[in-house]
Image 1 (cartoon, rainbow, N blue to C red):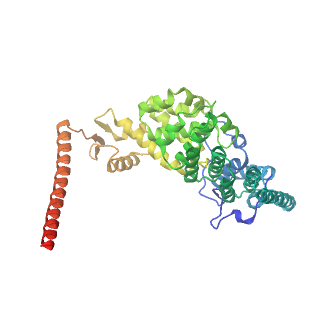
Image 2 (image 1 turned 30 degrees about the horizontal axis):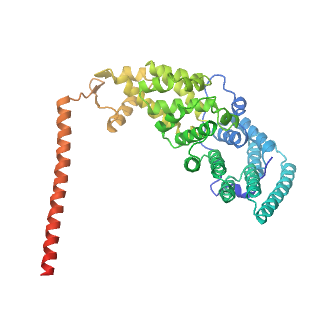
Length: 441
C-alpha cells in the first residue's frame, strides 16, 4: 500500500501526469469485444490508475466504471489519499452515493508515518556508519514509499540523491532506469529520453532484458513526442520473448507495442516499407497477433483497399482516444495517415475525378476532399492542381530536362553568392593590409 499528502497536485490540477479535470467527451470505442475492465486489468499500479482516470475524463458513458476501477486500485495498492478523495468525490457527483473515506485515510496515514519514520531512521544510521550499501538500500525504500504515495517528483529527486551511495556503474544505471519508469508514469517523455541516455552512458553494454526495456521506454517516449519514424525503427526490433520481463511489470503491454508500431509506421513509412518492416517482420508479427485489428489495417493499406483501411483506422483510433500515450495525438495521426493514403491513391493517375476519389477515400463530401487537397498542395505533399470546372485533380508532370536545368540554376546561384562573399573578403583583407602598412610608415 502507499500514501500521499496534499502536495501531490500542482496549481494546474495535475497529478502524476494526468489532469483531473473534465475534457471534451468522446464516444466509447467501436472495436468489437472492447471491455473496459478487461482492458485495464492488463495494467497495474499507477499505470492502471492513470489510464482509468484518463478514460473517465474523456468518455462519459464509461466514467463511473473507470473511476470505480481507479478507486479500487488506489485503495488496494497505494496510500494516495489525495487522488483517492478526488475520485471518490467525482463518483459521488456521478452516482449520488457518498463514500466514506475517513477510515481508510486514517489507517494509511498511520502506516505511512510509521514507514517513513523507520526508513529515515535507517538512512540516518547508514550515513553515520558511512555504509554506502545500507544507505542505498534505505534510499530505495524511500523511493518505493514516495512512489506508492504518488509523490513522483520527490521519488525522482530521491533517485538522483541515491547516486552518491552507488558502488558502481550498474547501480547508477538501475537508478536511472527507475527514474525513466517514473517519468513514463507521468507521461514526461523528454525526461524518459534523458534518463535513457544517462543509463546508456554508464552502462554501454546492457544485457538483453535491459536493452529490451530501454527500447520500449525509448519507443514510447519517441511516440509521445511525435517522432514517428524514430519510434517505429525501435519498435520493429523488439520481440515478445526478450521484452517479457518488461511486460510483466504491467506498465506497457504487447498490444500497446502493436498500436504504437502500426500507427507510427503508417504515419512515417511508405507502402513498401510498411510491407518490409512491419507486415513481413516476424518479430513485430508477434505483437500484431495480440492486436489483429492492426494486422488487418496494415494489410488493407498495403493491398490498396483504402476504404477498408480507413474504416479500420477509424475504429482503432476510437479506442486510442482512451490511451494516455496515443490519445493526445489521435487527430495528428489521423491526418498524417489519411494524407499518405491520398498520396498513394493518386500515384498511378495523371488526373482523378474528385467525386470518385471522395467516395473511395471515405470523405463526407467532395468539398471536404477539396479542402484536404488544397492543404496538401500548399504544403508540397502533392504536386497537382484542382480544375474546378471539370472537377478533376490534375497532377503536375515534371520534365526531366527542366528539373536538371533547375538544379543547375540553383547551383549557379549558390556559386555566385560564394564568389561574391569571397571577393568581398579579399577586398577587406587588402584594405586592412594597406591600413597597417600606412600605420607603420
